[in-house]
Amino acid sequence: MTLEQSAVRPPAQTRGAGPAGQRRRSRREEILEIAVGLFATRGYHGVSMDDIGAAAGVTGPALYHHFAGKEAMLAAALIPVSEQLLAGGQKRIAEASENPAAALAALVDFHVEFALANPAVIALHLHELDRLPEEPRRQIRRLQRLYVEEWVNTLTVLREELNAGEARVLAHAAFGLMNSTPFLGGEVDRARRAELLRAATLSALQG
Image (cartoon, rainbow, N blue to C red; front, side, top):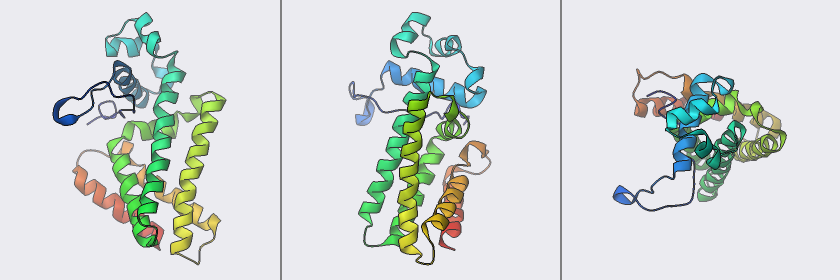
């Protein structure tokens, strides 16, 4: 599976249920998924609005009905993802509030699953975030910092010998491991990749 094929499917308002109760995606979501895949594989500056419209089968005026431009598409992809990561991390910690080791394991499982499901978005976060205007970029950076601090707080409770700065170093190192998914080939099946990433991350964090 390529990055373009595995682009994120951003959240949107439900427009009806599909097979087996799945939500039917809006046209806006479909266009955004295509744009994310193109940005991830070709780079932000290597993709034009015409390219996106052609790939989505949408003419220029219709495309601008959904998005003001490429910056708006990038923000629409990255801001909800940052919000979802923060909310998901907080949820896992709350569910294991009495057991910091279980909370850390839950955080790792959560992030590994996200990274494997959304390598295109991981690639955008790594390489294209600075393409955004200042305000959405600041919003995303703030959400990212809050997410990191959830990990830091969990680590400092679990490992009392660590101060916050040291825990932050370990958290960022863990993200480096887990966010390697855009660079992983398909020679190892998904379940095994998840197993290896979880084991490597927990080993790095637990000392």
